[in-house]
Length: 396
Image (tube, rainbow, N blue to C red; front, side, top):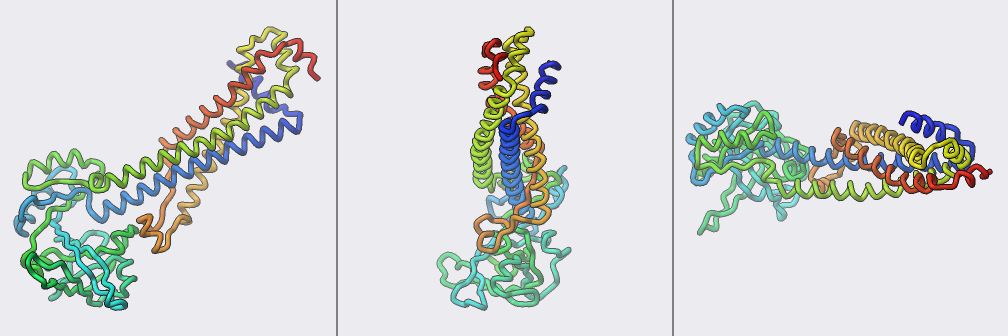
């Protein structure tokens, strides 16, 4: 194997013809660019998925235990204290959710649909350590919602809730805005309002606690935590951030796989340039291969030399493409190159997408690209290894 590798390196280093030099350079550049495109695409999809996951975890906690029946505030607080003692749980708080329409001072006839998240303790993203003591109902608006309506800290917002069964009266809440938050997630930043749970329950006497929000030390350890939490109270139905968004993440996985397969076809097309370069190499080194066969080299050995030549040429392109793709991904993430205006943020759900490369994806890219280069190298190597040594030695 050492002799074949040394001869393959010599074949590539001693390029005498302009045609051979040009085809080899084209093969190297084509493989490198196709590989870099594959790395950047996978980094983009990984960053997109992680950006959505991080925003969902910050906005909705890692797990929520929904009450199957009516849950009073004091009972919910006691349950939250018991759940906080479970191993792996970092924070628990009672929560309830309300939907309504918020008046837009700029367009009174076009109210904005909002979701009110009432929690006992303010989430960390609000920037509050505790809820301020006020006569009215304190609230923290999503940053895009505040910008859209022109309502900011110190202002008062009006939210109208759906009427109760059998009534035409719309319950109205007046919110004292004490700040804004930004999760870089369009749904939260444009439609969510966070309010204190106790104040919301006092303002709406007929309402109750919807459940308990649970944050974990390890967001991926939801299955282990669920087993311990279900033993505390059977009236709670637990779900986690993965289950609540399973359709979204399934679509992202299929999209990533589809893009990977499509770009693998691009790499396959580029690998044909390696095949072309090997054909030119075989013609240029025809007398050398004929001499090797005359000296006793078997067709298998000649074939191995040419395949190694193709792997060295294509493999160097794959390596250069991986380095180029990683470097481009790092630069694009550092300068936040992929950012969306408000209109597109609604479509893609996030304000910007980082590009994140993972060892698994890099290994997959390297493996697939090397395999394609190997397949492209076999045919010209096999064809050359079966040539007549006498004819090869007579070649000029």
